[in-house]
Length: 393
Image 1 (cartoon, rainbow, N blue to C red):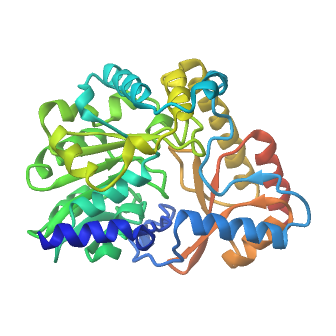
Image 2 (image 1 turned 45 degrees about the vertical axis):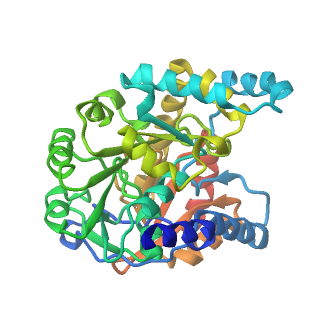
């Protein structure tokens, strides 16, 4: 009972649960694999504010390329935009029916029951809800290192121990080592696949086997935010395991390939009893606007748009690869909409110089090396990056 009161108090004080930026890593030098990563960390919102301030202070000209937030600059789709405009006249109404329509659409496509779908305004509230719902004194959360830090950093701020398991020499999640790290105090295992910031993917059969074993002992949270960038999302997702009763939570978002980062909508697919547990710690679906819901309904599995955005992303990424190669840089081969590569100067100096040229990117410092993570943008943005990069590389 005391634990419940403590968590609810923390929920009301949500500011202390701000998430952290993911740390960055590299598969470029296996001899330096699995480093203990340290770097600057901030909440997504405060970091975004920092970036905008830096742009205002340092940019000699207007921002030409916004390449620091892993957004999809090709979205949302025309169908989504039309749905938003059509919904405005009735936006005074609460969105209960729209929530049901979208969750049923997702359930039908993923071949699960509607009771397995839990909507929220992006995946962030669901990550926070999981950190709160599973917390207990003395507990720990097991993750790869580096990986997306939102959920484990929130759990750590509550009081949980964050158990960081180094990646493999290929900078993929080390599932065997993660399984060995689980103990009697582990309440969650967090798997980001594809991983952020390394943009790598683990073997699908091995991940399914891992989840089948581990979920019998502890809840496994699988974050599939970037799965739509893979060649076969339906063959990779672990959502079908929910139908077998597995104790897993699979998170999905419209923020990436769908282009909804500013519209805010996401969901988890999990067991009904898990949804009841999470629902105690988030407003979830009632935090989603009617306009966003209708836009999501209109664009969900709009293959023409999604395939087009994916094709343009691949073209821009290929262009980036060529630029880096020509300038003598290596990079981590990416399965997502961002690329990580080493830079040859201080990271802060690098981002400042790029911003002065109207290009926003991010940096991390780890393993005695400064790194840039660049989001994949429109071709004009990639060309702006190339022009600025060649001046300072």
